[in-house]
Length: 141
Image (cartoon, rainbow, N blue to C red):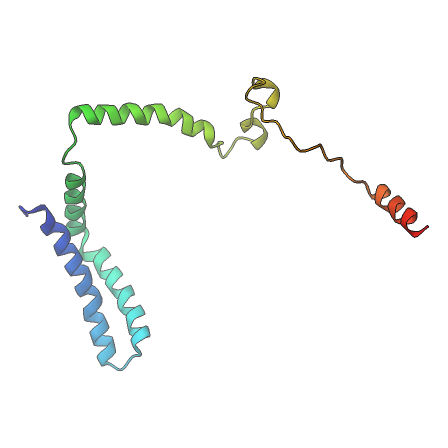
C-alpha cells in the first residue's frame, strides 16, 4: 500500500463490514435490534481478531510513521534525554509495590526548615472518652 492512509482506511472498513453483516443477518432473522447489535459486536470483534491481524499491523505502522514523520535525530536524542531525566523523579514519586509505605515517605526531620510545611491552624488535642463522660456530667448539673 503506497498511500499510508490506505492501511487504516481498509482496516476500518473491514471492521465495519464485520459488524454490519452479522447485524443485518440477525436483524432479518427477527432478533430484537439491541440484541442483534450486541451479538453483531461480539461476532465482529471475534472476526477482526482472527482475520485482521495483518491489516491491523499495517495500520499501526502507518499511524506510527505518520506520527513520527517530522522527527530528526536531534529531536529523538533530546526526547530520550528528557525521558531519562524524568524517570528517576517518577520512580521516587511512586512507591514500589513491595516496599512498605513507611519507607516511601521521608521523615520531616530530614527536610530543611524552609521546606517543612507549617500549619497556621492551632493544634487539636484528641478527645478521650473519659473527657466526654465528664463533660456530660457537668452539663447535667
